[in-house]
Image (tube, rainbow, N blue to C red; front, side):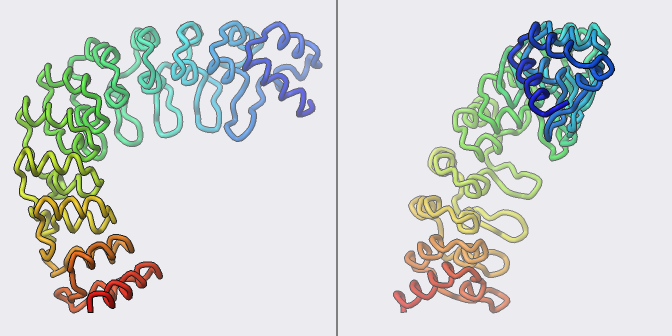
Length: 361
């Protein structure tokens, strides 16, 4: 069959024109009908069943299935029609596909189940249907995320409460990077979800993630009402004050130092890196300036004798180099005898040293 005809079939399916679709398919030679409706289109490899399920056209889903198209047909990412219908919140399509024996926990690429995809929406009816058909709340994708992780990231209190009603222990899970659902909600600033989890005493120290991503109200909730520790270290030995310097969250930095009285020169890890070292390496000029205002020691060195100027040069950040030179930092060697200028490789950074050092000499 010619390409234009196939494109027409896709368009009719997407727009929900069953009568026209049926007429077009009936005009095809009988021996070719199954091959046509089973065609995989484009880079995604979607079939007409995928398009119909994604757009919620139940009548076309039923028609295609009666024409012999399997409800378990998958595209190049192993997505089934159930993934499509669940991710878009199409209740009636989900109900029909499950009734026709679609596998409730089928895995698409990256090991996402229909339930995980449904958690990205707020369709409680779809979630109820999947759970009623035995969807497994304990399954994890390739990153170790469970459906509850996804729900906590999306921030819908109704979805989170529904999942908790189905399993009181659903929150007892960690991703492959050690993130709990509470960490996830805090990192994404989902304050109402954080409150729900804390009310059920599902507590762990998630203030780091909230602060690192600039969600001050969530951090205050964790730090003030639930006694999270503002100086607790993560697995790499860094405190929130170091993490916010890495991400350039100046408001969170001010909150930690001004309100919680965290030491602005606190060193982290065996390398003894300070917030100024981290901000310089990432090239956050505004954070460098704020650290100066907060009283950071501009000349402080890490365990290898490196200053913030070394770190700015390591990160190849010309503007940060210029700023630190203007603040009075020198092109002094570290413990190995290496100067910041020797680390510079990018032309803009080399020029920043040439200009800055000539101005200060």
